[in-house]
Image 1 (cartoon, rainbow, N blue to C red):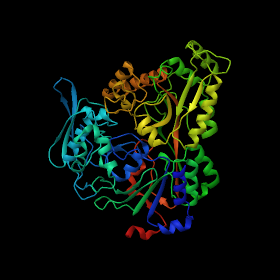
Image 2: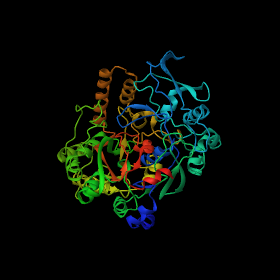
Image 3: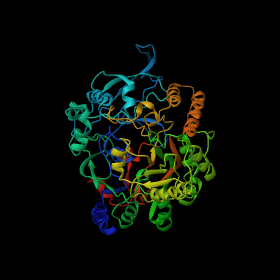
Image 4: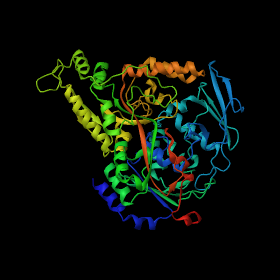
Length: 558
């Protein structure tokens, strides 16, 4: 609480006074602070949002959901000759891709981004002790070879439908990070991205990080080595205000200029805000590939029983939650694929609000109603579970209260154990120290969730806590389907595989689907160029296109 108060004292200044102070400065409020700034470690939206301004991925999906180059000159394809099928030593068919780094790509100390950085980054990502979130991608890259200082060839161990999308291959500055990687098991704590995040040479985007106040704010300034179009804003400050009510208060007071949809006000709070103050801001509601759900630790003996998992879902009135909180804008999820994705199917098991079915399933699982209202098993163990989410998110806290009440109605006692996002995602989920946790996935178009659902991607001490299968879901059919989907190039055949995968997920319920989110972007009327993507790659990747209109036009010349 004291940290939030300090942030408010810094931010709650008269709006006119602050606007006068920063005609060429943009202040952004987000609801989480990154657990790390290392691009390889711990998947967090807060980190991706910040790094979108200071780093450039090799490839990404843009707002039209098209695969585009950012750091490379051309997306490899069979048509342009930059992609070739190859037969691997084991007889399997792989693909060889040729990428060329843009000649105007420089780290912020003026050093060129080169293939030496690419090869080094591949070695970091492949090492099993590093603890990389997207380790599977690096393992698939069976060879990375530098042709010259800017051209390199990647050989992948399979030909997939999205073979050229190396979006999550994070390129690191080899000359700066090599020392930290001397002991791979210590890399995550020795990396300069955390040990000295303002060091020159870590960033190759339009901005660089010049100050970090942990848990509070991050300061970005123009990257002097950036060769692309010159960013309008001289300085951007990203404030983490983890209490969403305080986030709204700071926006109204002028302490912050905007709240992004990627990580800002939940939809219900934004709708209420729009009713009161919508005329003062530009508000964009962007439906997207964001899946709100409850992860379940399947190694927990209670949650290991699929009957209990189904009972938990039957006991939730998700339609009423969506209507009451989100005016129906957040459609109920029955599996993990959004209705906006072309591989979505309605032909999956559904769990409409039916408390009687929940009670019958709990009875069948050996959890019987006792006098105090909380079920017990034959050994006398009470049916008590814990649920965690990101503390300070008022909407999630409201949803938790509804869930707690509805589960209590069928005899399940749920205790709330909320944590700051940087703790929940930086330690609790990664090390699987939880029973149930409510949060969201951001996905790319037709995104195979291998890191989140593959049996090989369960974090553990043995693999350096890499992977994102926090559930501990081990299902041979799911693994087979993911393999088959990725390597099926015929779209109708691939769609059928997707439909079966979505149905399997809904049958087994390794997690409880809640709804798909529409994200509200609350922008000042003078800000132009912010384009929500609706996918996992943030709007900040195009921050160089943001500009002020009718506000301090002289800032561009400064």
